[in-house]
Structures are given as C-alpha cells and as structure tokens.
Image 1 (tube, one colour):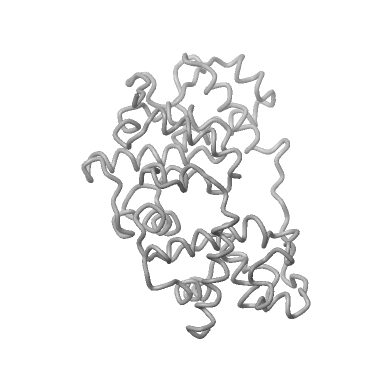
Image 2 (cartoon, rainbow, N blue to C red):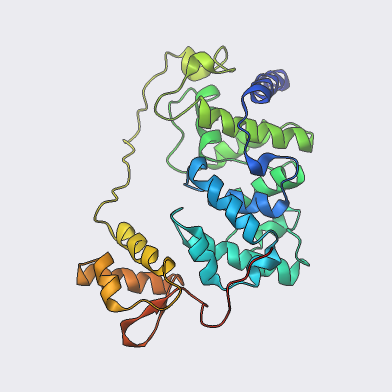
Length: 304
C-alpha cells in the first residue's frame, strides 16, 4: 500500500476514534503501565463489560506489581472471579513477581523485556509497549486482523490463525511516530470491536467504507471452513469453573462433599481436579480436601 493510501487510512480511522472511542479506565491518561498490563491480560478472550469491574478491584487491591507479588497466588485466582481462563491470573502473579525481583518493581518499557516476563506473549508485549509507553509496536489482535482482512485483503474474515503476512501488513501500516502509531493501533482495534464486527458489520458507519476492498467487492461471504462456537454446558471447562467457584468462595480447605455437590459426576470431578492441580490452580490436601494455591503460606495482601 502506498504512503498516501496509508496516510488516508490513518486520518480516517484516527478522526473516527476521536469521536467514538469508549471511555475505558486503562486508556485514561492516569492509567499506570501496570494497569495497562493487567487490562491486556484480562481482555484476552473476555468482553470489556466483564473485565472493567474486576480490573478496578484488582488495581484497588494491588495497585503495583509488588503488592500482587507479596500475596499468595491463590488470592490472584480468587480475585480473578469468573473472567474465565484462570491460568491468566497465575501468569499475572508470576509476571508481577518477576517485575518486583528483576525490574525494581516497575513494568519494563521495551518489547524484549516484556516478552521475557512469565506468561507474556508477543501480542501482550507489543500492546503494553504501545499503550503504556507510546512505543512503535505492531499490535495485532483479532479485531485488527479482521479490519485489515476486509479493508486491504477484500476477505470477510482473517485466516484461522495469525500469519506472517498479516503481521507484515500491520507493520507496514504503522505510522512512524510512536505516539501516533499507538493511537492508530488502539483505534483500529476499536473499529473492529464496535463497527467492523465479525457477524454484523455496520459498513454504513465505517470511516473506511469508501476504500474497503471487501465492501467494494460486494461483501463476498467467507469461503473457508465454518467457525463453530465452543460448547460449554457439561464440558470439563464448565466443571473446572464450578470447582474453582467453590474454592474461591471458601477461605478454608474444601472437602469432598462440597466438591461433589458442584460436580456430581465422580470421574469428571476427579479428572478436572487433577487438571486444576496440574495447572497450579489448586493444591491437594489430605482427606480429599483442596484449596487455592499458596494460601497456607501467605496471608491475603492488599496494596492499600
């Protein structure tokens, strides 16, 4: 894409974002780098509406990485609530510990340093570098991929998984200035989240509608394999969540009767408890009891 074309895209999207951006706490000028890191981890596969109250409570309780690092990892799992994919809570706890021990308690500022933190992948490192520190970093999430697939590639959906070509395209489209590139990235994400949605895109409200290759081609249907939603009811994932909910709600070890009430099937319950132990999310005790990890060795710690 030519520089003129890229500049036109930047102007249209940034102007749209200026008038339509959601007021989210981790985007406000006073948000700390730690708050940005926590938000990026929480927002993975979880809607904004569910994240906001948990993020606010998390930052109230642990306003800096050292505060979380001083708490038991089980307290992080408890505070995670029902955001889903609770191993993310353990990753944040591990990252907070590394930040305290190796970075003087301050979130590192470069992608290379961020990538070295436990549980921080390429997307999160780029997002924190961009949104917390205004660095020029290639931030490519599901929304960015979909917008670029449509506007530039003329396709209804992006590939099933991130490709090197997608990353290269996103990098080519980044503005040169760090602060502007960070704003472009968040604006593109917002456009995908609010307008260029997966199932019901609102092309009439899109600032790129006049130049969108997909719309100009007549909005051809996705010609790849259908994308099926994940089953939930009766799955091990649901059962794991039910067991964790019981453990989160108790400040003492939980015995077999309470766990059986949460997941009646003996084989499924045993299988899920084994997987929770393997993931480090619960600790087994004698007499068939379980607890959240680390709660026998560290008291709950609040930052304020």
